[in-house]
Structure formats: structure tokens, C-alpha cells
Amino acid sequence: MNLVERFQHAIIPYPRKTQESNHHPQCMFGGNELLWAFLIIISIGGSFHRMGPSFDRSKFGFPLILLGLSCLIFFPGELTENGVELHKSFLQSVSIALPFAIGAIIVLRNSPTYGGRSIPGLFAGWIFIIASWAAIFLEKDTYSIIAITRGALVIMGILAGLVAVFIGVYLAERSSGFRDESEPLSKEEGDLVRAILERRLGGRLE
Amino acid sequence: MSIGFQEAKMLFSGGCLLFSSLALIHFASSYNIHNRSLSFASAIAVGIAAFYLASSSNDLDKMASLELAMSSAILGLLEILPIFLAAITLLLFRISLLTNRSVDASS
Image 1 (cartoon, rainbow over the protein chains, first blue to last red):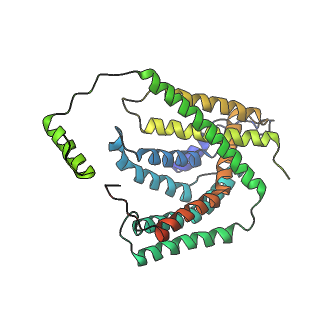
Image 2 (tube, rainbow over the protein chains, first blue to last red):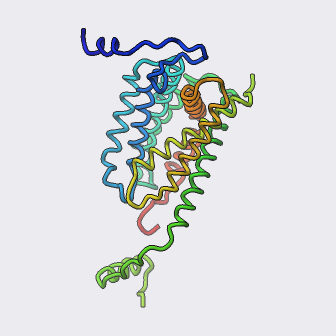
């Protein structure tokens, strides 16, 4: 008996519930735990990409996103009917969003706004974006007003949460009050700031 | 076929739950000594309210309704993914073909 079989035997069977849900009581999310765990790993990876005091964690961001995404695609674990639908929808979205993201990065790097203009680079980027749009038109044949309404309701929920958290952050910032006054600039720092301002604004500062 | 009140409630609460969980993950991942506990508290309060709303929108048990609300919210967002992509495509079109201004240190 290998490790997997021993683990399967170790799970104590529970009687089925009479309610609609027949999920295993030991499992928090009724069998889709791995799927949710990978989604959490992807969000942790995304959250590591930021500036500020926790910037030194940013080097783990991309590997975590890659790990979560690969596991989500290749090892979703045993899924319930709901999980299968979610996983299928994820795979469909990845096949659309991945070429689009690659194309967008290439286009941005080769556009005059964020880099040097390069026609072959722009062409390659737009090929990826067009491929992504082709995938959209091939996979999604119809668009219903109900789907758009569902999406709009979800966005309203997200916005409601965002407003509540903004209010919380605003109150937290307001209640913190003033802290110690920062030290004045040293002579070298003052000279540096003066030089930068003179270079940017032109003329000489008195 | 239309969206009933209970489904609308579940989708709305799913959106709140999704945002609340992402905000909590973000706060925890970017935790530093300057964080304020009230910011966490507001995200937790939103999550609890949305959890209550989600569990009152169907007859399932608490965890199943939590999962159903969140997965419905994710599916709802994925369904309108092409609309987001269309907006980004328009921006990319403007940046790559219509704009000649470069972003340098002086701008």
C-alpha cells in the first residue's frame, strides 16, 4: 500500500447530510481546497510586487505567481462539479489572457511612450493581441445581457468593499496623528535637492 | 431568463468577499511596522457582512455558500473579461500608434 492509498484509507467516512450540500465535513471547501490554495498563492505573489517597507519580499512575487498558476492549470486536485466549472473557466481565460499579457508587454516595451519605437516589436506584440482576440471569438460565441449583469453585480460588490476599506484606511491614517518631526536635511542632502531642482526647473535657486 | 434577487445578492456578496479576501491577503503579504490595525478591521468587517449576506441568499451550509458566492463572483468576472481586454486594447492602440510622447524624468 503506497502513501496515497494509506492516506485515502485514513479518511474517516462521514454519513451524507440530508441538506443540499453533501460535502465532506473534514474539507473546508468540499473538495476544491487545492484550487483555492493555488488562487491564494497567486494573490500572495501579486501582493509581494510592491514598493515600500516590504519591498525586499518582491523577489518572491513572480516565482509564487508562476508556481500557483502552473499548479492551478496542471494539478487542480479532485474537484466537485462547481470546481470543475471554475477550473474549466480558468483554463479558458488563461488561453485568452496569457497571449494578451505577452502581447501587451511587448507592445509597451516597443512603443514610443515607454521605450524606443520598434516597428517589428510592435508588430510582434499586436500579433499576440490579435491571437488573443481570435481565441475570444472562437471560444465565446454569444454574449448575453445576463452575463454582463452578473459581472456588473460582482464589480458593484468589489467597489462596495473598496469604499469600506478606503474609509477604514482614511480613519486609521487620521487617528494616527503626528509623529516625531523628521530631521532637517544635511548640507550634502540639501545641495543634492538644490541641484536636482535647478536641473529640472532651470535657473538658479536663491 | 433573468437574475433573481437571491442570485443578485449572492453575486454582490461574492464580489465583497472576493475583495475582502484579496485585501486581507494583500495586507498580510505586505505587512510592515507602519501598518494600522483599523485597515485590517475594515476588510474583516466587509468580509463578515458579505459572508452573512451570502449565507442568507441560499439554503446551503455556511462554507458551501461561501464557496458558491466566491466562485460565482470569479465566474462572473471571467465572463466579462473580454470587456476589460477591449478597454486595454484601445489603450495599447493609443499608446503604440497614436502617441509619440516619451515618458522621461522631466515629465
